Length: 328
Ligand code: MTE
Image (cartoon, rainbow, N blue to C red; front, top):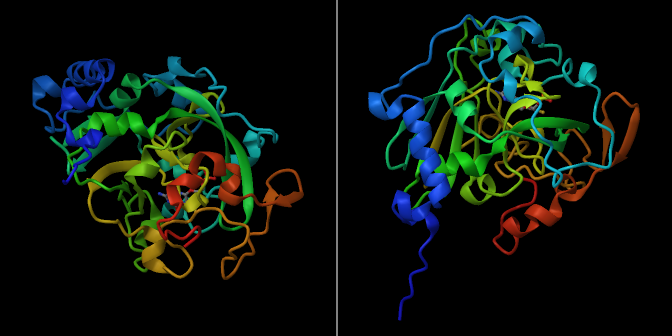
């Protein structure tokens, strides 16, 4: 006898989602004006000048500023010191603004208001949301995460945001979805790096649905108790701390739910060096960087790298017995 195991995403919206979440989805769509305007019509909130150059100005422009600092979730703390803000905010990878680490001032040219976030692909109804409205509707919390780049440097960061699983609930995905593909903005006029034609812009990343709904997968809207500065990937970025940093895509404009594995930006450039899985593994060297140890930025010290960046307990089961490589 064939027994079909029904998965949550195969149910209709009100069956698949708890009453609380279903209510919140309806309430969110209603308060954001999307129900009245017709879902997917791309309603935007009032436009503000987003060219703020400093945190104070960013705070004054942010309608969600009062949500920061958010309460720290005690399930996500660290034993290592948090990296100093003046270090982490001036040492960033954001190739849209240059292929070096000092992009923080160039990134201030990015206009983050209004900012549309599209949720599409295999979903009941595509959504086009105003990012401020999305953040307003989400339960924000602070989590202390390790952050490990494949270049063998590491930070410890107090991110603020909401679980990726909340966005998956909102998306109302269809059966058969196995991956989520994420895409960054495209605007070569302000992001000069996007004029470098040898890169396959826009920046794209992907996760399996199991990864995206794992407790650790976090959509980030703030850091150090404040709304996210632009060099960190404002207004919305990913944090998947068991993977190398290039998976944590910045300034997301689109989430596409799909049955097909997406090809990510770095994978397209060089699949041998930057695979889809990109799980932190001290035993698998990158062709240019040993992964055995990592430099803790701002401290001058190196420490041994941990498998899955120290998150094996939470995520190792995702890769057990299914031939998915730990690194590439
Ligand atoms: N996202 C976009 N859109 N563009 C990028 O160049 N770089 C990635 C990732 N997300 C990148 C991106 C890399 S290589 C790393 S290590 C992290 O962002 C760096 O995040 P941080 O600057 O907050 O430390």
